[in-house]
Length: 472
Image 1 (tube, rainbow, N blue to C red):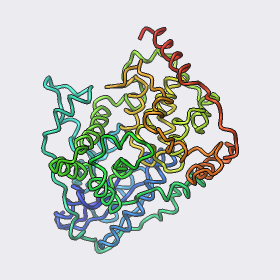
Image 2: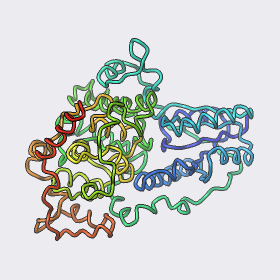
Image 3: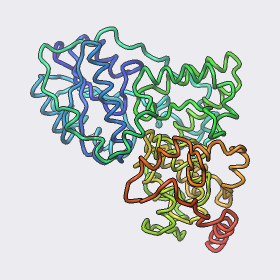
Image 4: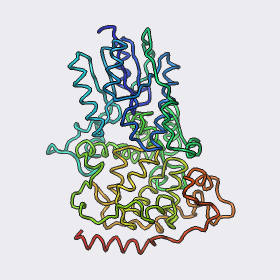
């Protein structure tokens, strides 16, 4: 056991710095065999998240190769793959970073129990979150259902200092065979959209660190205002990298704390956003139903439309609702794989309130289209917007997408960047949308921009009427 290899199972932790599992494996002084497994949880990913994960895996393989190590790729049921590798390599331990969605928890729990029964060391480590969900409790011992009290409870907690990348990753004498990443065809469902989205990707650990550094140096002081302006590059953009663990929340937290100590005004708001992410995971851990059921059960009887074939749903997905803020945001997602946070709220509110469509429709569409897709944040965001979730926007608060545009995009820089119809010289990003979208949609920048399928005022009245009729 003292010389047997340690299998390091990578999942959504695609980095080498501040990686507790990797650091522990290297400190053991035994050979380390990093692996990635394509199992059913990978195959279940939507088109954009699966493609982006594949890019991250390829980049991690390059990083490990430069450090004198390798990344071994295998396909199959995770337990079967691990058993085969243990037999092939004589490994005496398997280490991994924890995940928190129900499917991953069930898989990892079974694997850990089986390995321990066989006398194989099985250890899971933190790193994806700053605070393990079971360590954050209310004064009465329960979990937090409202964000602000949770923020107050954790804001002064010590957050572990980030770990440096190991100076050396011990290699085995013989490496096991590996699949070829290209054979996995992880980007197949992206079709021609991959070429459009790719220039907007900030890939890998070094890019994530540069992104964080630039944000702290140049943007965080104005973050309070800048994060609400979709035409302004005022956010960190780190959701893409956090989702895949190309940077750790600990690294972001300590950078934000330094900025706050330096008196940079928006730093605390940035820290609050990091805890908002923690809150989503806190809820997913304690109430996993948030992923696929109304968190507030009294919404189960609400008559949302669940038919994705309806013309209104199709128009929403295509960015052809006739509501410019909504359409611009959806097109931004299709071209870049990301969407401004203000746009996410407007898009979600319009679908669930103006169109009275179930939040699950939007949740699934984001899961297919976002390169920064995160199971906890996506579910909580949609339920927050719909009114059915914890700490939700009041159900009677219906964002007016027209007045929101007047407030946050006064000069229409954002909508002009993403909507081509009716413009003599459209922005290149607006035109890129027509190159990225499925050909079957049969849309052209020369089309006439549509009238609203449901005008803002009419949709608000319809939503409030539906709520009143259901006794809300």
